[in-house]
Image (tube, rainbow, N blue to C red; front, side):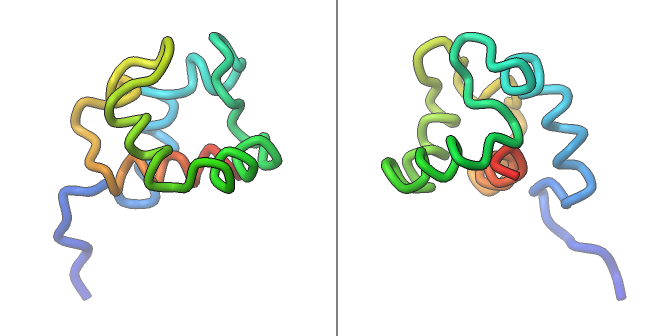
Length: 88
């Protein structure tokens, strides 16, 4: 079977993309960014705003977070996968 023919990140690339584009703030919580692995906070944000709103905020930028969260090549699906990755 051939691999996925998609421009979206494959699962193995999510951690690498996170490290390049998101970790600076989401590992430390800098600038009030929700920390990677803080499941309670991510769950609360998802319940309050919904996944689509979180993806839109990542796409458009919010407060101190730049648009696309420093991943200019990410699709909305990639951003959703990165949010999911950070929430665990």
